[in-house]
Amino acid sequence: MSLTNQRVAYGQALVDLGRENNDIVVLDADLGSSTMGRMFENEFPQRHIEVGIAEANMTSMSAGLALIGKIPFVNSFAVFASGRAFDQIRQSIAIGNVNVKIVGSSAGLSDFGDGATHQSVEDIAIMRSLPNITVLSPCDPNEAYQATIAAAKHKGPVYLRINRTDFPSVTKADAPFVIGQPVVMKEGSDVAVLATGYMVRLALEAAQSLEGKVSVKVVNIHTIKPLCQEKLLTAIGDCKAVVTAEEHSLIGGLGSAVAEALRGNPLPMEFVGINDVFGRSAHNYEELMEYFGLTSGNIEQAVLKLKVLGITKD
Amino acid sequence: MVFDKDITGHLEDKAKALRKNVVMSIGANYPGHIGGSFSAADIMAALYFHKMKHDPKNRYMPDRDRLVLSKGHIAILQYAALAEAGYFPIEELANTKKLSSFLQGHPDLIKSGEYGVEAGTGSLGQGLSIGVGMAYGLRMDNISCKVYVILGDGELAEGQVWEAAMAANTFKLDNLVAVADKNDKQAQGAVKDRFDLGGIPEKWKAFGWHVIEINGHDMADVLKGLYAADKIKGKPSVIIASTVKGKGLDIAEAHPAGMHNASLTKEQYDQAIATFGGRA
Image 1 (cartoon, rainbow over the protein chains, first blue to last red):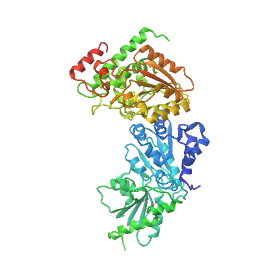
Image 2: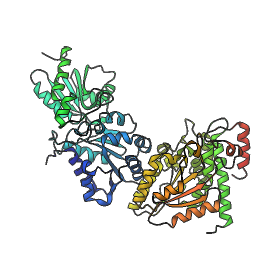
Image 3: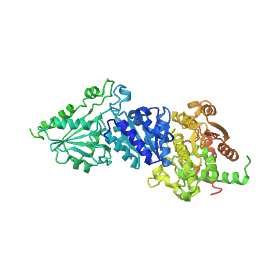
């Protein structure tokens, strides 16, 4: 069955993990019905820990649980999970390479109504700046499920980015998920669009729309860190230019990570992302994405900009 | 509870040895956290050489007692105890903070975990939360042991300490013992003058903890406090230890901040070693 919401997919994965591994524990700071930690709580009340509205304590506490051999999944909204508890992640978890899974829920603009305080435009940047941390940003609900399973099996700290809204999966439910492996979603030979999270499906739409004009390859970067240059170059293949697409600030996110990983291999690049501003409230997700320039049309424009450089065929 | 003079005498010797080891690890003309190490030295000796169940030859035994040094800047005191207990050669202490050494300026899990460090600390206020997680996890696994967390009194200004205190109370973690090293001084001077914390025992009581107050330099009192905590069921205990920052070294005791992070001249170093060197 194909999943249609990343939060629910994540919650389902927690439940399935909980069935096979007694060491899985889940922590929530009064947001369980949003993060879907509640699904785990309903199945395994003894292994779900409600810590109250105290993210700093929750995060360091998870380090203590991991040091006893538990595999804690720590839930909050992405802004709080990565931002409010940044020092706790850095000091209690990352320096010691402690086996904690930090789950940033309602990431990007997906908590569209709540505005700038609740929308994470910088979580990828701050999480990937920390040594030892693996940063995962699955593209759809099916992949969110697989990423959760992979995070649990991975030894070491993981930051997992989860979207709040409903949207259908573009990957198959049983598609393998290998941490660090870019996934070619659609072949193409002119421009490679490297996208993460929700932007992957928009990249696929853009590629389809440009069919006959530009041959667009779509690569799903579900692992922002580690991002291996060799694997990235293999995925880009013969494409002569790169567009990155992310629901995140242009500063420090996927685009920056790709540019850093490709250093020494000059490829013309364009970036689709949020232009160094905070989010704002809107009545629906699509409207907000459009406001910040995160549509398939924006990806098309970025591809066509590169065409101006004479790289792509007419 | 009355303790045999053999036990308290032995632990007093150990505390002296720890102070000597701290001086050795700092060396001359290089700064180190002398003051807070010396205020906690007697407690540390009682924990590592009497109260805590641990074994350097079986470092990871599941039911060992854990010590989380939330006031991570006194790492040198924990190293002093771990070396004295046999986790690594005492000679290594002289290499503390050198680029080649596994002994970092603050407790480091990756570099020193195998030598007895239980948690990475240094950013103040996080150790009690780590201890809450450990105590919770141990109870889930039905492992009977204690988690000790050593905090400074200046550190109690960190809000996260009180988040952790509420959590420990909510979870009824009677396998968790906090030790507040109340030496009344922080880096910039007297705690009361710099930032008044108000009533410390009252605060812990209000947060649902069982409070035990001791003289942190009277070994029999230290032991009495540690054993008293064992008897408390259904809630966490805090031992508030009245101490003197820099205890045992005249120049440190007289210093306005108790030689918080200070260096010794070669002459002072030799004198300190002589003061604590009666037994090694």
